[in-house]
Image 1 (tube, rainbow, N blue to C red):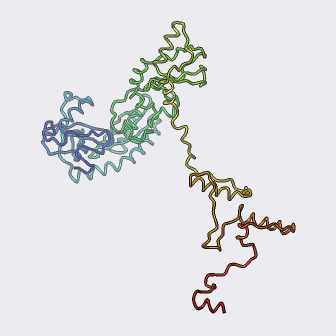
Image 2 (cartoon, helix red, strand yellow):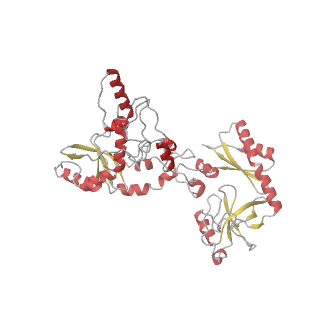
Image 3 (spheres, one colour):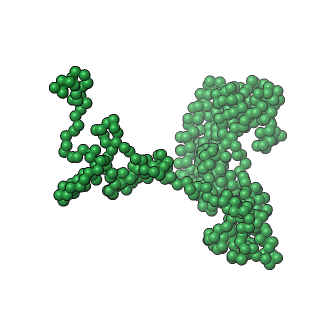
Length: 446
């Protein structure tokens, strides 16, 4: 285990998982070592001294001039495969060597050189602007010993930077190397998170950048919105080329977009195509979405063959399979409203009608009991102080008594109304004031 986690993992950009890290024979099968420097710059070096080097070690390697400091990212048999992938040729000259494991003084000089990179980049941009050069210096990388610096710049055309190199050498007193990069390479060096939520492909694993054009977007029926088609670098997204071959192959097995289907109900024009599910949507209007019907590719070929023979079907849909296709291709989020879990509130400011409280309580009791019958409550014989309320509620009963008093009429009271204590009458005596049983009861009688 190393500081980054397992033996095969690495926290560096464009790192490769070493799945042979647990096999000692695979590690000793090659003397080539992959060393990574700042951001995505890598190099391959020969371990001529047979040093015990493992993934994650900081080593001092040969440079021109002096030496450089980097981190070991791959060892063993996989280094040869990585060299083939990056087209590293060993027949062009002598392969640079690994000097030693980095010493404390090497690390101090390395950290000091890295601390000067940001200030050097800002000052170099100001010098380039004073020389009226149409270029952008995107990054500066110092060598491990601090004797050399690489200036990465972006330019649309060719730039004559000979005067710039002389000014930079006189200003910083180091050896200058200018390296031109593209917008995608700059995004890979800086890094970031793409709109998909993952790390940028150019920063994590992509090395070779293939040109991307808008035909890939049209083939996949993507929206022609430039804001959605461009990536973090301002160019078209590289991921548009990942599935373009799959869509091109699927398009050969689908009907042409220029064919118009003839039916007894009318003509249908192509609207959109689901390449992966082999579903085609047709519209009755060639310029807008009107009367959309989705059918399978097999049904579309059947109608095309019928039209060639001079026949016309009644409708596009012929069986239950097309109906299932329409149901399957419907919008699954149409019923998922954002307010479907919100509780409905009663409108404020509206008074309840007469008897609404009793009706609502009766309805709620019906819903809870699962029965439509009203619940009949009888007066409790054990507690006469809490009789059953009259029909319509106590308020309605009091209103009826007030009307009777004002009109002067005498209406006989029912048994339920007698049980209700009229307003103004004193409360019933407490249980403590009632006569007790035994001797106290006889005294009360006397």
